[in-house]
Length: 155
Image (cartoon, rainbow, N blue to C red; front, side):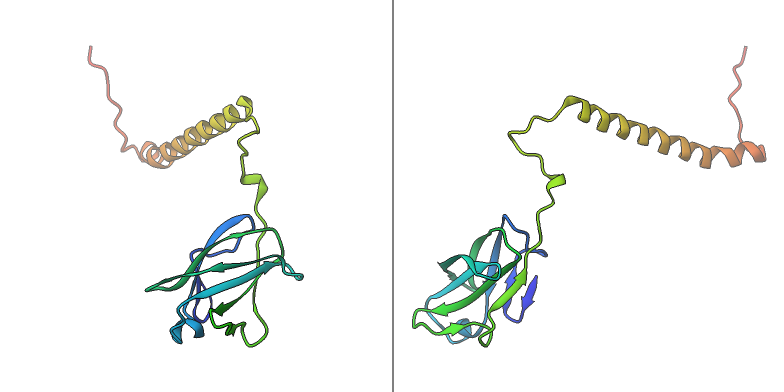
């Protein structure tokens, strides 16, 4: 996903408590800086501020970052000569999506067998219902029109 010109993430959504790989092809890469650091934090107050040295590749400078909790992911870049790319003084600020807890099963939480059985039973019933609907759609018109030949047992 391209969030802004020359900045790419390896995911479509920025979700808190997940890892993301960021690729930077901006001014510092184009000026052939030998080292680039990403300076980042979370939320309006830039909580948990950190600097990470990015790895220079053919795809630009890259780094993998653990996205912590917060409303926004804020970052800017600097090189080894202390030249900054901070989006013309506004920094790069993007919203973080909350993690969807109802889809997560934690390792330390036991899963009740009853819930697994209910899921399995509902899945089997949905398969049976789909099969019954298919048979009705396929064979009912043949029965009505008289084109359905029943196999007669020969005595």
